[in-house]
Amino acid sequence: MSAVLRRLAVYFLAAWVAITVSFLLPRVVPGNPVAGAVARASQSGNCNSQCVLAVEEQLGFDVHKSLWDQYVEYIGNLSHGNLGHSWSENAPVGSLILSYLPWTLAVLGLATTISFVAGTTIGTFVAWRRGSWIDWIMPGATFFQAIPYFFLALVLVLIFGQTGTMLRWLPSLFGYDIYTVTPGFNGPYISSVIAHAILPVATVVLASIAGFLVAMRNQVITTMDEDFVLMAAAKGLHTRTVIWYAARNALLPVVSNFTIAISLVVSGQILVEIVFNYPGIGYHLNDALGKLDYSLVQGIFVVITLIVLAANLLADVVYVLIDPRARQIA
Image (tube, helix red, strand yellow):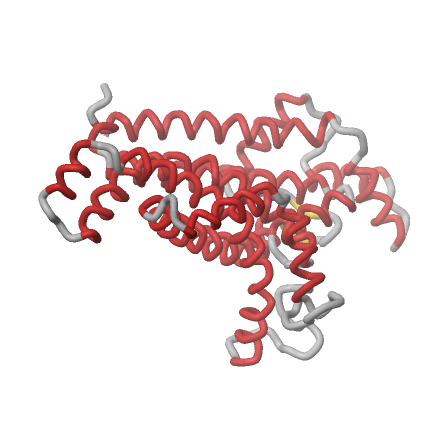
């Protein structure tokens, strides 16, 4: 329990640092979010001094308040779930992120699960059959591990995407067919969402599975030389049982490395969403940056950070639960 509490304290500190950075960044980078919002407001009419003050108050960039007062107000708004107001979308940032989040979490959750399960399973098999023809998987895994997410996404679009130039099997733009399908709980919409998610999920899986595969293979090879595995094989236990003994113990370091992998997967998925115009957080983050909508950028940054920290915390808790040695650390 003490190990879990220490990890909670570390993650709360990391969350506070991330929130503070998200507050400071829009105030130190070039550009004026208030000026952009005022310019847009002026297109539909004159924006007088009262209008400018209202925009500053709405966006949380009141220059008439000290930086500390703005920070206290920002923390207070966050505690009430208020992430600000987007001037480019003219809507609360919180409601916008809630509409973007399911798209990102669906792809992230499915792709990470497939990568972890398939990577650890294949890595175990490759380690057990090392020295055979199956070792040819490793150069291919290393190749995909070295390819940037966005480049792999472009290659898949070129080969399989309907906007590509080769097979044109799968849709490669948007989260569903925005021209012919009506959103809702109906067959055409659900099938369109699934079809449009295939290429983004495949990109993330291909780019991230190699990390789990290589890590699991190396750990299983090391574990197979341990005494308890050699003793199990010497007793004549079934091959599946011996493999399970080795894989179960080799899995512990892989789970601990999952915290690093999830950060890379999240950052890679942001680029994947931009390539596919997939309506998740990454695509809208890029769009908000182009429009200098700092309130929306700020809110998305906070949410992405909290998602990564939550995933890392979950991995740490799972590691403590499955490894008794971690619970014995004072």
